[in-house]
Image (cartoon, rainbow, N blue to C red; front, top):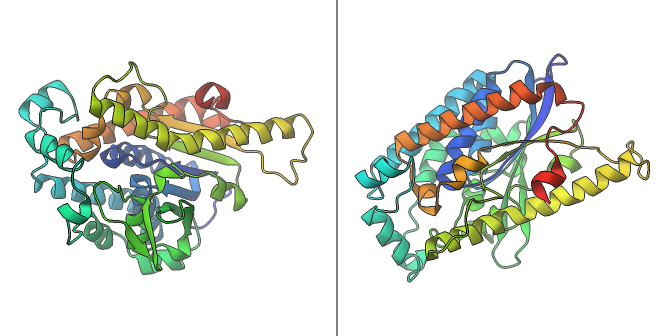
Length: 341
């Protein structure tokens, strides 16, 4: 992907969130359709890592149009896998919510079994059809030799608890699957002799790779995990889900505090902007809409639900571009303190 001086360059950070990654698909679809933008780098975690790998490989194949087609093919593949799965929303679920599966017998069974048996017991063969879909969609050999845009995906080392950031030249189907490995659903993924779980435990997504690489100062975060929820959860599943969203947001919120601290030092003249990158932070989210969805929806790959999230992502990206395009390259459009503190 060659640099075009007439376009605004941005870096994109993609959160994980299971099937909610279809919202990110919609956001990316709209951003790729805007000829005024050029993507300099992408970092992703979990579903964000899958979107990131598909996006960057598509750009390598044939630019924004190819990337849009490839994302569409990937998420249609997710829907096809889900259609063959026993895990389906019930008619009552479809009537009450766009994506929750509270009344799905198969969800109730899966939810119960995951509290009693590990994936090593329930799935000893470690089958995950998403890996085959990813390998069929992305040419990882070609992906690794490319340079632009930069690509990072992250995973959590099971034994050390440390964050591992895989750079573009290191990325394989295994490293992307490691980034998306929920430990109650799948066995830890081995990469280069180390075992990994979902990257969201340590960075969802990490921003520091986008800082250390230099380049443009604008980082756009596509956020899937709501920071705020409308009510205190009172059932077990709701409590567990909220614990997980708080945990998966915590690393990002800490990084935002540090970014705000450094930005204030630069603005006050206490740090030289020549030695420190002053970031412009932008965010696209659907906090109110996604806060209405619970943990069951993150495993719902029903085509209608994915299309609903895709349309929502397109709408939110359009809102962002209409309201904040002029800010890109000049200032943050997100009030970091108000959103993350």
